[in-house]
Image 1: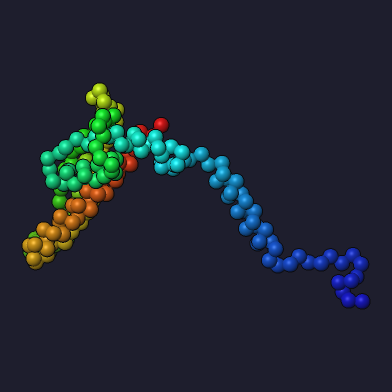
Image 2: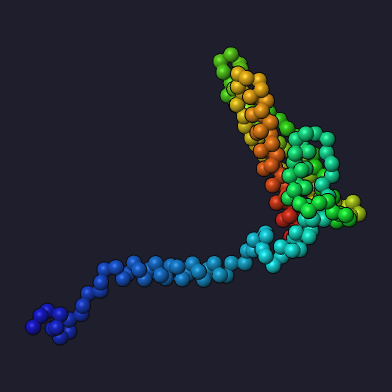
Length: 181
């Protein structure tokens, strides 16, 4: 008679079933927890028509400075890609301030790298001119100073344009979050 056939002998559990059961239990528990989550994405399919309609009703007020104009153009592309609204429901005004801060300074007091900071203050008003939301946003870019003046100017403009794009995305997100019902 072999040892497993003895009466009263309990076979030991296989190594490997314990960790597998733990993983399965953890996945089921995680699924249950996530199923109970009540967060909804900003662009949820069921509300996207209403949010897009509200965004399409935003008129971005013209600005004077070049960098503010770049931010405005990005906002227009984001809110009203099909063209300006005939009867805007909202008016978005913005002011953009650009500053440059030297980062790398050589021994001869010559800066070779700059941070370019864009700060925007914006205000959303309804059709009657009542301010319904205002806020601020900030974006930082950087550029190197080159021996070539043209290369430096081009690098600075590219950094400003990228910072303006990021700034416009932040402003658009803040405004759209305010408009979500």
